[in-house]
Length: 194
Image 1 (spheres, rainbow, N blue to C red):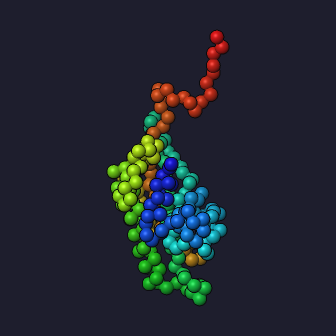
Image 2 (cartoon, rainbow, N blue to C red):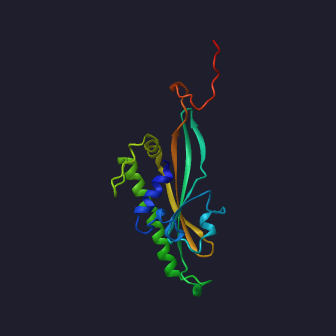
Image 3 (cartoon, helix red, strand yellow):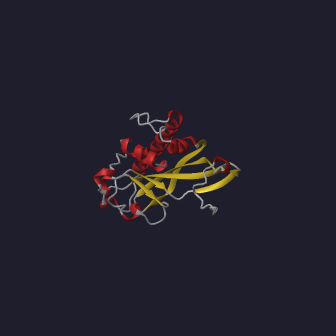
């Protein structure tokens, strides 16, 4: 389990998204793991039928070495909502509707951040009570979130001609492998012939 599983859990319980992965239909899905928003992906190929609003999580992460024990890793999430509903509005944007969509997107960002902070603090989902702290890997992932680095905002461009986009990003301070722990199972070690 990774942070993307926690984000997908949130997308399934958050009413505006109502992500339903078990249905198997793209129309019922609103959470997607993508390489990057501007690269060809399942969302970009199906933008005309995907649920609005929806959430994309970038599986491409970048990291910076902080010290001998930690790496700072960046995470990105985007929320997208259609600003045009019908072919009749093609080429026209209603400023009032765009403002409402923008406010909604920023609400989604704030709601996700509030939820993530609570899950990091308690180790469990405040809505369903699902415990994430029991899994040491996912708990370490949650605890590594650096809350002071969380930022969000609207992106000015209209994506694929009909979607307004807001992004949330944060950094995690993740531990590096400790050689003294005796956990060398990731390496091929020489054996001695006696």
